[in-house]
Image (cartoon, rainbow over all chains, first blue to last red; front, side):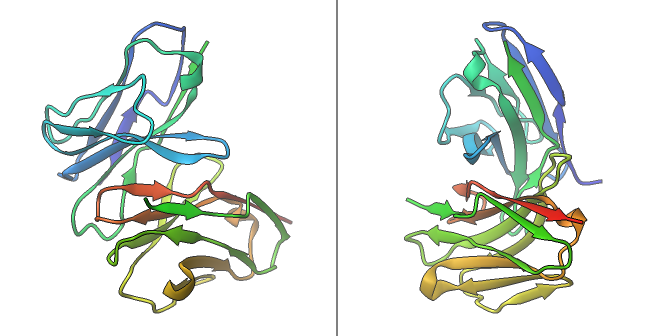
Length: 113
Length: 114
């Protein structure tokens, strides 16, 4: 089944404790992206990657890092999480010519206390 | 810069009513793509439709229909004979270069009451 897999689905952590949210897709998509969703703000892009070793900042990159060492994986790293990073996070992938736009992961609900 | 506006934050209707969700977009590109996604209470994002800027034909899929008007930069979504299962947050989105610069509107929360 074609899908984007994110882990974990839920995470509660403390301020300052480094964490990684993993994202993997099995569709050989070139383009991957991370979004955060906050009430009233819709989905805002954090980082995106157009292919292996090519990443760029989205609209809200502060406090996040990403890497794209393999085509299928695009982890999101929070080096020192803060409470304002409490949010619902989505990983997504797509490809040129993909008629369905993005395929989204199931989401990761992160709470930083 | 591109932008998507969904002026309706929340809408409530009674089952079997028709409801239209508005979407207005801004872009400088002549080639772009518009999307609608549904986010049910379970949280996942479900693709509904993609429309490219060269295709202004309206589309109907069952109880769902979409009205794309370039003259007013709008891509509105109508649900006919709404059902409780239609209760969700609906996002309109715009992509200028396909696969890049994907911008979402703030979403409209639709509640369909029995």
